[in-house]
Image: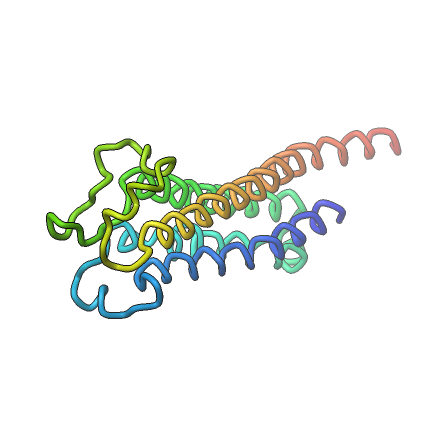
Length: 196
């Protein structure tokens, strides 16, 4: 039962992280809160990969729902090990989602924002391998949207941090699920043999 309580607490921890991932991804479509850039097609293609909505959001809501319903699953499953196996599979889905969110966010951060410069709409920092992050003087080369570099760097950094937290939580539950799925039957057999 203790392992079910741990799984439920992991589920509760994942929900706000997933919601924040979705919010950060959506905000990437509206630099500075302006809607005209997405309507005019002047948004980087990275937000369209839905790393926060699909990867850090929906793919993490699934294991969160499984973890929160562990008690009901145990009642419908034949054994507690069966319930733990379902949590292991859900954890793998969540791990894939949080990894996807991390990789796409990192690539977007390295490429830099899509903005209007003196040369037109482009990725002015794409050949700098992320060095623009440490050279704030170059950020002024992005004329529009206003403060797009700060906007993108902040939201993508949030997505990176949240996906790492999600990965850690899901990995902990994966280990918890594997240990309990494997060890519980062995413990029950030893207890039975001792009682006999």
